[in-house]
Each structure stands twice: as structure tokens, then as C-alpha cells.
Image 1 (cartoon, rainbow, N blue to C red):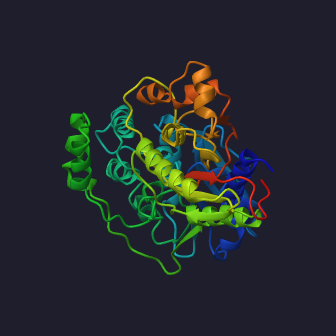
Image 2: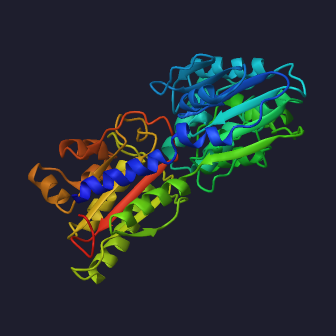
Image 3: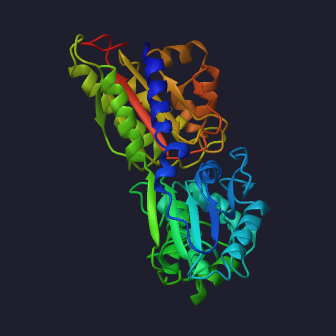
Length: 424
């Protein structure tokens, strides 16, 4: 098996480990004596709803919202598709429908909330006096600023009537069970889909400080709301049987990829699933590490693969195209400088790198030489934030379409050639 095929299969193994068809059914709660209501948001929400429908023994009703193109053929649960990463009117409709379904429930009822990455954008319920356009402008500015996802979600929670525990509050006193696929570093329930079902520990003052720190031009309506005591997240009351279950995590997917590598005679090196920072800087650091390992590795040594996950960020300054995974990989390629025997892949497990149509890209030792032959410069493409254009010209982009799950970024750097038992 060639290096590129191995890397692609590692990625597919990581994605499969987070497939709702396999990881959701074993985590379903016991049916209630009353009604069962299903709500949910995220890129995996529709596939999670379908998996639940096929396994649930009794009646249920509900609504989930997912990104356009990420739907699933549910029969009992309504699926709404909406825009991501900036919300649209469909996001407003979805949030309102969920709040309506959660109203007037009793202690005999059960709410099952299905959450995954992308839920923050897909559940939009701006507070009084704040327009959707105001929220969109602030969100877009934060996404382009280089702010960490935890900072972005802190702001989102305090500009919402459904995030930061408010969805759980709306359903009280019903029993409330959240089944979540984590896409955030550290798997913090407060940050997965901006924590609509758990008590929030951040404050409106935190949100204001983040907007100031990243120099985001903030509409007067948002400043006024954040100064209003109603913008603080609510303190929550619990019901007997409440639960929050992580049914899939980035760490589990990385472990699945590591096990795949070992079965093929490759020694995995796990850097962790919570790596954050500027994508190009993480790429540079990983290139230094890979070159160091490659330089010390004898030709007949067992190949190694460096595996990592998390969510990097991109400070957009150029007019090019590309998500954080392709930008990471472009920086990696630049700093690897064609290191012999080093191949790499970086892709988003949801199948969408940023707002593009690719999941990510893959490189080999010849990538810079091939680029030079086509008149391309990795340095110039980085300056323009045009990793997509760079890899598109070299036929190095990876296209999967929506995977209908999301455990965030997957990065793999394969080091070494034919080794002891390695099937490369």
C-alpha cells in the first residue's frame, strides 16, 4: 500500500469511529412514561437523529438543524438545513421550533438533545434589539480574526436566547439527556455547540473583553445587550435522570487511526487532540518535529506517523481560498522543504475545510518541486491565504463530501519508507 493510500485510510478510520450509526445506539436513555422530544443541532445532527429513529422503541417527535447538504431521511424527526458558519433565517426558524417543543413539558417527559460541531452557528436566536445581521457581522469578524473557538463561542452564547444553557432551561422540569459528538479541544460541554444544555461559567463581561481584544467592530445594539443583566447565562435547575454523554470524541478517533497504523507496521506518535493556535504556525512546528524524526531515523527503521487533532485558526489577510487544514498543510510543506520520505494529510472530519468544498489536502516529498514546475510559490500562496488554489493546481485536494459527523481536525505525518513489517 502506498503512503497516500495509508494516510487516506487512517483518515477514514478516524471518521468511521465517530459515525453516529455505531456510537449513538448504545448510549440511548430509557424511554419515559410521558412524551419523548428530540432536539439537536450540528453537522452530525441529522445522522444522529436518523440513528436514534431506527433504534427508539416508542413514539417520539422533534426537530434538528444541520448544515445545508448534511441532511438525512428522517421520518419522525423534522430536519431543517441552515447556513454555516454564519447563520441565516433557517437557523432562526430551527431555534424557535426547538424552544416551542420544549415548552410546557412535565417531569414525566424526556428531551433528548443531539449536539455536534457546527451547532453554534446553526442555532441562532438573537436577543431583543439585536438583528441577525448584527450577529452575522460580529461572527464573521471573529472567524477571520484568529480568535480561538472557545472565545468565539463565548461571544455567541451571550448573544443568544438558546445557547449557554437556555435550551435546557426552556424544557424544565422534563428529564433532559444530551448526546454529544465533541469537536472542541478539551471536550468541554460548555463549548460544544456553545453549550445550549449545560450551565455556562462565562459572563457577558468575558464576551465584551474578547470583542475588544480582537478589535471587532461591534454594533451598538450588541454593546447595549451585553450591558443588560439579561445577557448573563442562566443558573440551571436539574431534574432527576439528567445526563450529558459524549458519544464520540477527537481522542477516540485518533486512537482508532493509531490502531490502524500499528496493524500496518507503523509506529504512531500522538501529539494530542486539543492542539490550537494559528494554522500556519502549527504547521511550521510540526514540520520541525517531522524533519528531526526523519533525520534520526535509519532507512530500515519502522515507519512512524505523527497524529494530532484539535482546531487551529486562521487570521485572514489575503484574498485567496482555503480552510485551516489546507493552510496548515501548506505551511507544513513549505517548512518540510521536500524532506525525503515524509508524506502528510490534513482534513476536517466533517468533510468541509472551513467554507470550501474539500475536506483538506495531502502532500508528498515532491510537492514543492511540482509547485515550482507550475510556477507556484508556497510562500506567496500563504501570504494570500490561498492554500486551496495551491493544492487545487497540484491535484492534491481531498474531497469526501459531508461525512455527517464531526470530531474536528485530523492531521497525520507519515515518516519513513519500507521498514520492518510495514506494508508501504
